Length: 185
Image 1: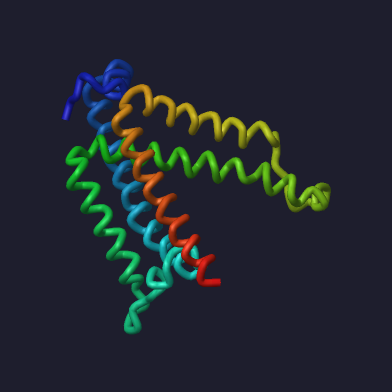
Image 2: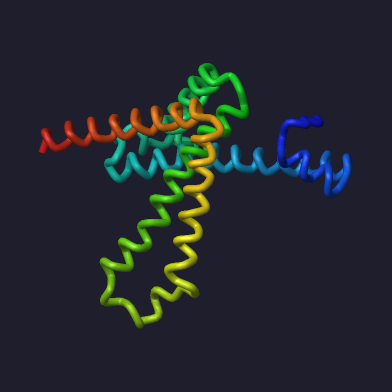
């Protein structure tokens, strides 16, 4: 369980000793397990919502008639997961490029607050958009995720390239689907 190359383990070992480092390792494992569980639960639902919205083919919006399970979305997500597992073959690599991809999503999601604030300027002062230390807090959030993303690029460029490749592939698929949709209209 002890990995002397991992900086977190070394720091915790120095501060809390060997027992503290082992306990930390267990909590770290549980945290990663929670992250994976969240992805397993949310990603097929996102695909389902995108199917309902028309961003993905309507097949993604189908539910089982008997128990309303998102069979198609779950099947596609499971197949994608297996392909990723087959080609990556290392848990750390998978986790690294997944976090790298999450950095894109988190930065873009947080940045939309600036777009929405500008678009709904007429609602300022109505109490709808109250945030202490705005715009400092979203900027700190964005900078923190940018730091993580840049750190991954520096530490493991191949994982970053895999993440960028997957992102580019899915963005390409999205635009292909929407180009075909525009032709149909």
